[in-house]
Length: 187
Image 1 (cartoon, one colour):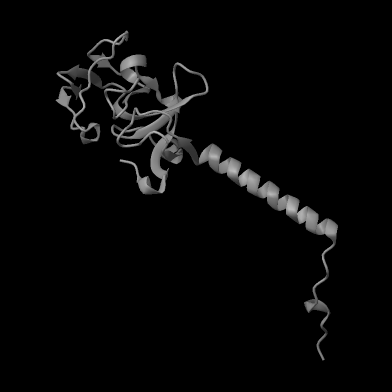
Image 2 (cartoon, one colour):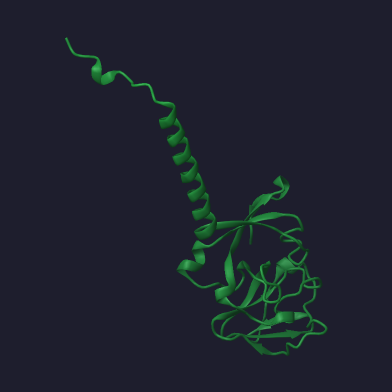
C-alpha cells in the first residue's frame, strides 16, 4: 500500500508565512519601481496647452520603450523635463526634428517649406510668442526637437524656450486613462 507521507502538507509556521509575505511585498515594490523607471509613467495634465487633444486634469500614461529603440518622430506627443523649471514635466507635440527648419507664416507652421496639416489645433493660429528671444525661421539643432502645444493660443513651448534636447524626453504619451469619458489612445 502506498504511503501518504509525500502527499501530506506540513503546516507553515508563522515565521515562514511572515517571510513569504515580506518577499511578496518586496517583489511587488520592485516590480512597480521597474515599470515606472523603465516602461511607463502616469502623469496628470496641469494646464490647457494641449487642449482639446488632452484636457486639464486628464491623466495619461507616457511609455519609455519607444525611445529606447528609436528617435522621436514628427507628430509624437511627448513628455519631457521643463527646460525652465527643475523637476517639472511638460507634455507637447513634436513638430520638427533635428536638421529641420521651422517657420511661422500667417498663423501657420511651416516645416522645411511645407505648411503642416494640423487638425489637432482646431484651426487656432500659430504665431511667435511675445517676450520670446526665438526668431524665425529656426533650424532645429541635431539631437533636439521642436515642440508645440496643440492649443496654440495658450502654450509656452519651443516658441518660448527653443528646441529641447532629445535626452530630456521622458517618454511618448500614448494613452489617456482618466477620466473614464476620455479613455483612449492619443494621436
